[in-house]
Length: 168
Image (cartoon, rainbow, N blue to C red; front, side):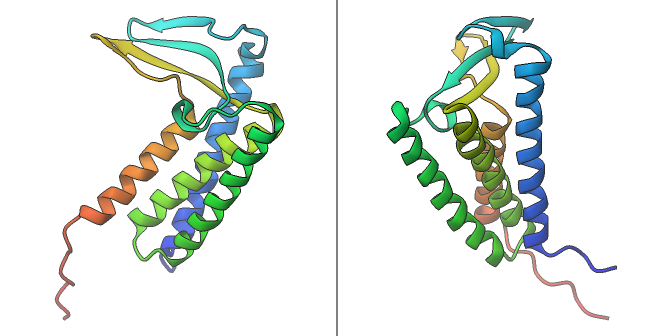
């Protein structure tokens, strides 16, 4: 059996990121009833973690908030352009870590900034970590996928080159 090509691994990463993001949002919104919660209402889970309902009009971590239909359409257009460029890069990726990074970012961008924005007009965020004088942004699985994807790309750039294995 042939090993998967980097682009295939990246496509799997994108699919898993998108499915995990949208599945978690469906569960949070409709399974746990967060769709009926008011903005900012939270459910304490651990001393450093709450589930909270936040509708984000911007992109990942609240950056570039957009209001109204024009703003939403601009962010959808930006997302489509970013996914197109990242897909082209994924297709040309030569390493698994680079392909996984591109795939995670593609899946996160599709989940957060395309599917959510088309369905809800904004992005649903739920996870809030805090404590020890620190208060992190409220985020979702797509944000996590984008962050991990960026880390995988950085890893690919800084990882040491491995010499080829000696032949028999």
